[in-house]
Image (cartoon, rainbow, N blue to C red; front, side, top):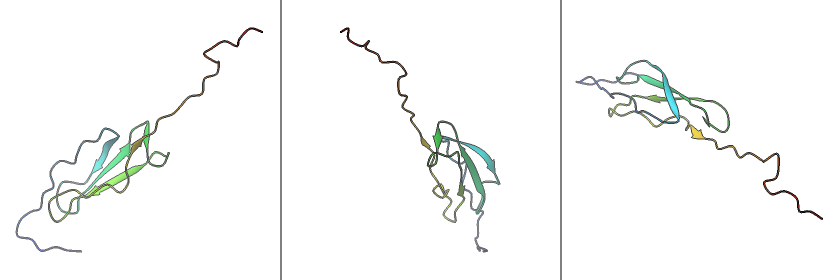
Length: 87
């Protein structure tokens, strides 16, 4: 797909994200791609994932293809906190 424009379309620096890190980027111009990888404990549906954004015709980055969400792990205590009552 080709676009005819009179000026170079620039999307700027991709956003920083606390749940993912930028691992690859082809540039900051039209149709360039920035790839993020989830940072533990964040994941997509419980699996480590990669998500990408694309520089769009309007000069903004597209929404991510997936969202890295922090997974909170609840631990079950191995020993009760209250000792058993004496009989």
